[in-house]
Image 1 (spheres, rainbow, N blue to C red):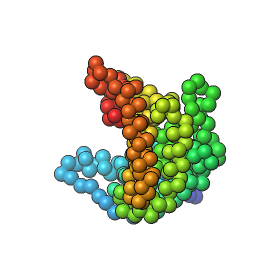
Image 2: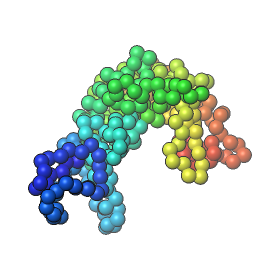
Image 3: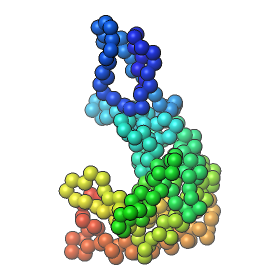
Length: 277
């Protein structure tokens, strides 16, 4: 955010804000003396939403402002604090960007950042780009594997897939397929009987709490299905069969561990586990 006033030069701020306090002036400040400018990556608008419901229209406008205010060269997690490239947040809003703006080239750049950050094991950090922080989060906590898990780092697979779905450009999948496959190998290597146990739990749960093991295992299956689809699109028949078999094994192990026959539901029966199952 940038602020320009009649009394000061341009001031750049790293945070979004609702109110501004101006001090140290020698004369009264008028309302029109300050102008605020939202700074963001310059995206061309390619889609729009409009309805007869003004509330829906306002919500959509708010969504667009929030999206733009959190994109400065890469998608960020929030306008007011960290301004970091959290991979979980980035993958959750990718379709928001694709439906409204011409963002494909920006996300391709961010996927290259993913490839540049990827370790030889296939592991990825929870924040991209990173100075090194984010690979080994929670390594001193019991039962927690290193990293944030596929509900964060799975952006390496989810985003190229959505880019293909929205653009129809299979060259995007071809370019990042090695990175995507390498990350899935990493997940398979650290899995136990086809299940994962990352301890990043459901955020801000109210009535039911869904643990990270459930979420990361469900994501493991989803990412494997995406890779199966990508292999099919790219005519990689051996990989297609490999991922189809892996997804079946994950689904079987997941059902065995988490399905409750008495309640006829998965996990705790809350919205999160039922959505992910």
